Structures are given as C-alpha cells and as structure tokens.
Length: 131
Image (cartoon, rainbow, N blue to C red):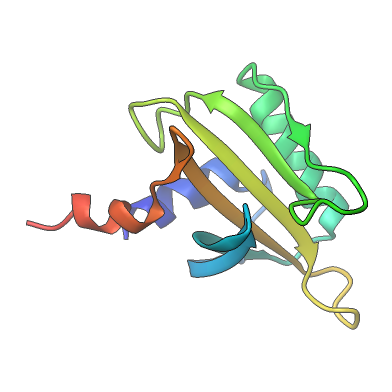
C-alpha cells in the first residue's frame, strides 16, 4: 500500500532501517482505533527523538498526553500538521511509541493515527486507492 511506503520514508532514520509497517489497532480516545504500526530495531528514546525532531524541523510542536488517570497518556500529538508526503490536507498526527517487550529493549513499536476534524481517517485511506 502506498501509504505505508510514504510513512516509512517520513519516519525513517538516516541509517538503513529494517522496519516493518502494517495495519493495526490501538486504544485511543476511549475506543479501538485503526492505526499504522511500524516496528523499529532501535530504542524507544531514539525513535521518539527522531519523530519529534522530524516534526519540529517541519515547524510543528508536540503535545504529550499526561496525567495519572488519563487513558491516552503517552500519546504524542501534532495538531493541524501539513505533511505533503502523506496527504494534501492538514491532519492531526497522533503517535504512540513503546518498547516492544521487556526482553527486547532495543526494539520499538510506533503506532500512528491520522485524524481530520477529530475523525480517524485510517478506515477510509484504503478506499481512496481503489477503483
């Protein structure tokens, strides 16, 4: 799917990366949301820094969901960002970065959700390429 190649290019590191991207789901905003999951062979700190630096260079600041009772804690949100490699319109990019497992401390899972007007656009992205 074209979107995976574009997202991989957007979030790729300068070094050769053996990342895998595929469709997935994650709980956000009190419900299961369709997302893109990308697995990286790097630590969570390295992946988080690379993503934040990429958006900062494009002029977008991040907001991290915090709070002890906030179920969306740990999600990083880039509001109203314009990333032409992904879409010709502005979107909210919601990112969750976590360690793959306790045993694999240098393996990271990145979840990416795309929102327009507070609606997840992932369910409709596959339909735009169909004829």
